[in-house]
Amino acid sequence: MTSDMTARMLRLLSLLQTRREWSGADLAERLDVTVRTVRRDIDRLRELGYPVDSARGHAGGYRLTSGTDLPPLLLDDDEAVAIAVALRTAAGGLTGIEETALRALAKLEQVLPRRLRGQVTALQTSLAGITWEERRPRADPALLAVLAVACRDHEIITFDYTTRHGTATRRRVEPCHLVDSGGLWYLLAHDIDKNDWRLFRLDRTTGATPTGRRVPPRPVPGDDPAAFVAGRLSAAPTRYRAVATVHAPAERIRARTRGLATRLKPIDDHTCRVDASDDYLPRIAQTLAGLDADYTLDADPEVIDHLRHAAHRTLHATNGPLTDPDGRPPDGR
Image (cartoon, rainbow, N blue to C red):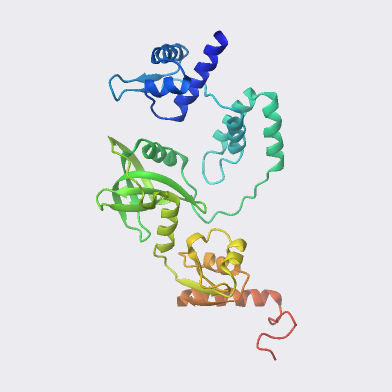
């Protein structure tokens, strides 16, 4: 009897951790008990230190709230392994979180069962990462946390935002989703003043302040936030235009490159178009070099000049004229 009650309370705690709010009836149905039993189990969790809040009435329910101390979290085996491995690599796109992640990992590994410790060790010794020189700014974990809570609670938030042209403005938005795109974090939100969907780069966002005002969830056009963001990014204006008509199938180019998403469009079975436009000239050159296929280029003069200078530097470094694979100069002489 005691083991049944313990298992039921652990299941109850697990449910409370997966959703912001549960009605008593929903919990009773999930646990296959009465609503009265749910109330007693909630009281037992409170006695153990879990801050469970409740609201009476038709729309009432139960939810875990923040307390003075963080109570124990209930994790199944897969969740524990996933968190332990993720903590090892948590600093990949963030800054200022490395030491905190290692402290959390040490605490978790102390309580991991022996059977899971072996899995975590195997994964950690099999994985390796390479740290490259960062050209893009890294996201602030504190800002990410504030925006994530606002997205979850559908709470209106204000912040200072600097546009790509350097103009600073104060924004008031309904946050929807956080999206990571190639190392850059974006907030997808509905701008209240402009009455339209907007994307905000987190490295240009400061002073995020929750207003305390919650609104009903606003559906994203197309019901796919990632696809919506990808479409907006591909259509966003860039400083330099560079569009390549590539003489290779789109599937081949997509397999050889990463991060092109909606910027790659098939023309026919043997040709595709790649929009390599960007604010950063070396990144355009990198994208074009990664195509590994012949192409014709429609680009701004600044792009052409940069590519020509880069080609001349490469030729100079080889200490000889450029030749084709048969050893002949490119003009065929």
